[in-house]
Image (cartoon, rainbow, N blue to C red; front, side, top):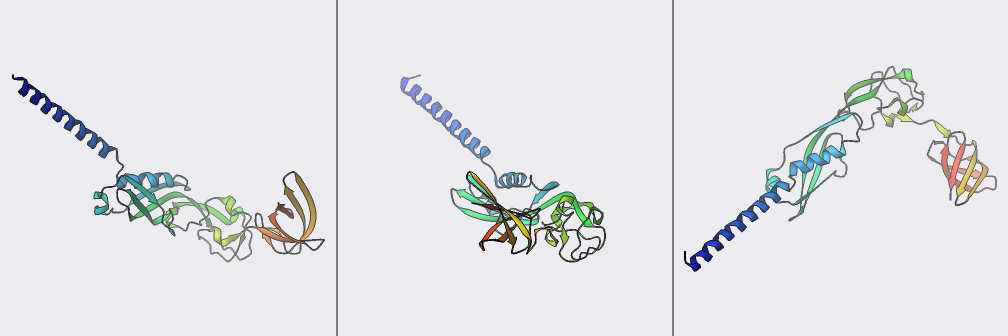
Length: 236
């Protein structure tokens, strides 16, 4: 074979080899790129891990144009006002090569136990273990404030009457008062390298962890965190 034809033949073979390598690399890149549905699935799987009970979810129909649009990086997010509970909406942003956003309907089901009232509960009643019982169901179909642990309810006071057989919600309950208005309290002031105790009088009611204003013997008014036993913690 003449030298010129041999060089041309080898050049052609080299070009073909390079083309095959480039196509393989492109194919590998497409395969490695996360799809829209995979991005949603990964986001929901991670975000629902901390929910009470066993969570499952189903993703609604995806926009065909969004699925076909080129995107190298998806960013799922929870829109303002939405929640990872029951029927909800998840947003997805495409970050590159062009920025766009879509919203996808999602159904989140949570299989777990929740508390139901065993009898009529009256306003001001302190809940005991005999007043509630656990029931299995889909928490995703109930309000997010549903009580799932007896410790969240026992010892708390009913704000308004609740009929028997009703799911119990945290927003229907109030924690017992740690400090009552007019009560003599013990102020515990803490700071860098010091701790001081003082006496005072509470100016408002407060449950454990809530802010209470206290008038001291000198007439000064300070604010602190109410704790059981008539203690108010003041930090500086």
